[in-house]
Image 1 (cartoon, one colour):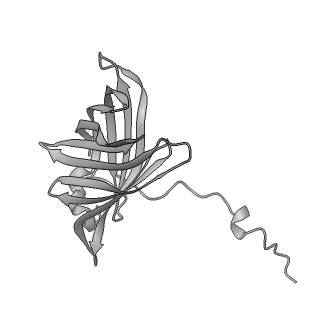
Image 2 (cartoon, rainbow, N blue to C red):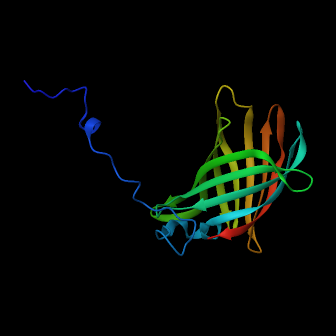
Image 3 (cartoon, rainbow, N blue to C red):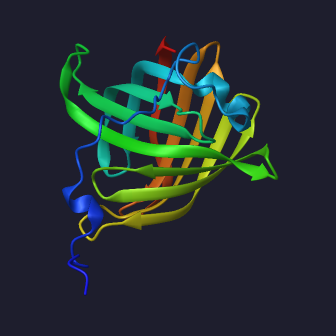
Amino acid sequence: MSDENPLQPPWLNAPPVDAYPYEESHDLRVGPKLHPTLDGLLPYVGVWRGRGRGGFPSIEDFDFAQEIRISHDGRPFLFYESRAWLLDEQSRPVRPVGREVGWWRPVLAGDRATDELEALMSTPTGVMELHIGKRTGTQIEFVTDAVVRTATAKEVTAGQRLFGIVEGALLYAQEMAAVGHPLSPHLSARLIRVAG
């Protein structure tokens, strides 16, 4: 009979591991090579910062600042991270507002990217959206295919997002259907590339 305890896997007492050994980059000049299926999304890779305006039928309009980081690690998807903060009338930071992480990936036909995209976006407030999209040149349009919410999250039922690179800036507009209101304008912003 063996002395090994089947309830104690071999990794339980294994030595510690080093830091994550693979690089992720928002700068195409350093780090891993961009996966060839992402060539159509290359203009989006970078760190973007700027201002926007938000609102919804159930809330007052507001001004915000935002930073979006779009990076890759050499595999066939992009990592998307957004942080936004509320601004007062003098453009001073008031408090953090929206935060979101997600992944964008092209739909493949064999080993080649099509103009169709899939995106997954998650918020710390308990809302996760699965988007289906289409890229036309440097413009991307996403529409929700599914919305999943935690029991305590606000009721979000649909969304639509339009991204574009216009004169070197990242512009976007987002519509949302939520808390009993149909698809309505929610956020729009213009962000300038600050890194990448």
